[in-house]
Image (tube, rainbow, N blue to C red; front, side, top):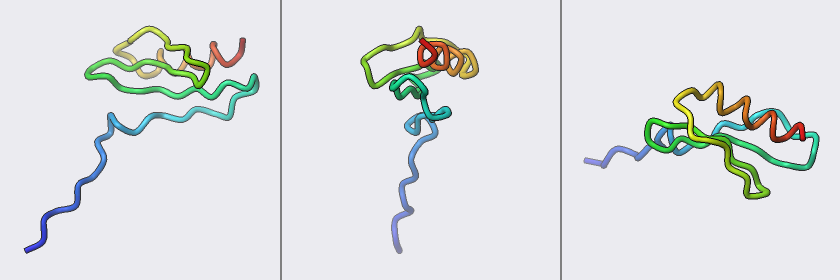
Length: 64
């Protein structure tokens, strides 16, 4: 018998918002029961329980 294939966990796959306009590439990452926005410039938003709020943090950061 073959072992089942391991599928990536949903928390390991970051959300990718629209392409940035300011040169920053933001995404969201899950850390346990929290979600936070992260950027390629090193910025990290506050940990939130709401993915929607973390996405809004990412949009605000990309906007300037």
